[in-house]
Every structure is written in C-alpha cells, then in structure tokens.
Length: 332
Image 1 (cartoon, rainbow, N blue to C red):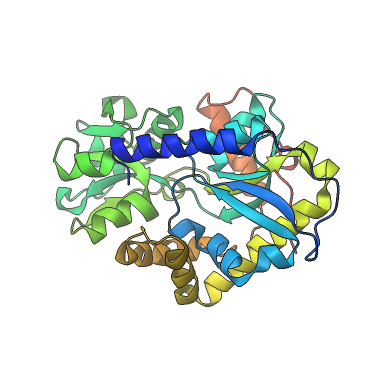
Image 2: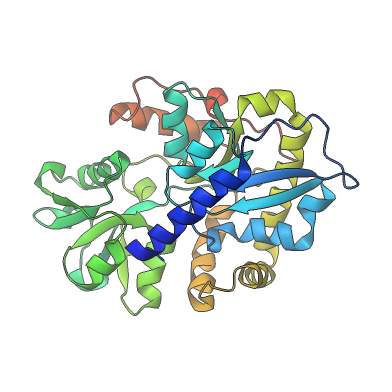
C-alpha cells in the first residue's frame, strides 16, 4: 500500500480525479433526499480503517437521506486534500490537524468542521525487540522520517520529554517506507501512524513499541479532521450540516457495532486486507470516541495546545485561535 508503485498508481488516480471533477461551484440549493446534491470528499490516504464511519454512512444511506450524493476521492499524495479544496475541485476533505492548522496559518480559507479522531496519530515506532523503555533510547540510533517538517517536531518532543537530547538522534529521510525499512533493519525506528503503520507491523509478525506524541510531552490534538472552506460554510451551511450529521452518524454506528462498519468498509473496498483492517479498527475505536462530548467535537483546549506547540516548533509563525481553526456549529 505504501510502495512506490502503489503511490504512482494513486497519483494517476488523483490526476484523473482532478480532471474529472473540474471546478466545484458552491451548490445554491439546500440538500434534500428528493434532490440530492453531488458532493466530493477527498480522503487523507487510501481507504482504511480510519474511514470506517464514512463507509458505514455511505452503505447505510445516511448521506443520501441527508440529500447528499457523495463521491469519495482517493488522494495520490498527502498534499492532495488541501490542494483540491484550495483549487475548488472538492467540497470536503480529511487531513491531519497539523496540516490544516499550517494551511490556515498561511492565510488559506480552510476551516475544520469535525474531528474524526481525538488524538494525534504520529509517533516514533520501533520494534519491541529493541527493548526501548522510553524515547531516550533513540539517542545514538537512526530514526527514519518522511521528510514532512512536523515529523522532526514529533521526534524532538518525545525525546526531550524523556529527558534526552534530540540533537543526538540520527535521522534519515525515507519517505513512506518506514514499515519496510524497519523490517529490513535499516533503521531503529521511524515516525509513522501508530494505528496504521504500527498495526501493520504487528499483524505482519513484528511486535512494536510506539511513543505516542500526547503521552510524551505533546498536545492531544485531533489527529484527523474533516474540513472545508469558509466560503462553503457561509454560502451553504445546510450542506455542511448535512454532511457532518451523516458522517457523525456513521462513526456513532461504528462505535456501537464495529463489526458492521468493518463489513461495510470491506464490502465497498474489496482490496483491503480484512485481518489488517480488523486490527487497525480496534486501535482506532478508542480515539473515535470524544469522551463525554458529542462525537466529532473539536475541543478548544486541544486546538489551543496544538497551536502553541506548532509555534514553539516554528511550524507556524503565530498562534491560531480555536475559533479560526474550526467550528462545532454543525454537529447534530
């Protein structure tokens, strides 16, 4: 799934999506079941367990009942969700909270409309056979990073929180080959998504140790959010409300009956490996739950903590208010 050939194929799909979508004009009419509005959603990556709630909502007809004819686009690169939204070629998209915050800090029009997961997904991941008790054990070892600037911020944060010097960790840029390079013994650890990359290794027979950002000095920000533009929010709030309500319904179903959502995910995406999807969904379930607040809630304190962390690591120049980052106004 993360091989160069697979990424090339995804790039072709994204190019096709770009040409096929054309410019997305803001729908004038409010959505209704009798006259559904065609809406595009760009995923953050190829369909996988984190999207179970979306595919549940699709299979159950929640989008259709909300007046939405949903088209899902698989990105060819992690930058595609932001690029397609900026280009007016999609209505909604998913991305890491860091990516959305950085885009907003640059003056872009994006705004988050719900949280998909409630914790950061990035973490240094090592094989359990390395017997690392804390991120301090990474000092003097080689850690693979994708090349995204936030990777270094994650690595530096967890190592410093463990009382060690991040400058003494050797890093090498490996793109998205962390799983393969770790299995091959080329690196001691890599920064990846613990419910995805970490679970992939576990299912493949390689037990891992991960150092989750929010457990080692980092902010407990939403690691995946749905977002759109302020233009769409102002021009068609009914459409945004309908999309959020259907999506929240799908994730509520997933929390209540994971097996049913897993079935829907696999039924609509037959290329997904069932064993991996099942294990990954089990890892995601606890972080779909907002814990005492409505599902999908963007918790202001978590957004403020993310903003401060980004400023501290020079990933944005000035803090972003929780209100500018996103809104909970469309939650059911």
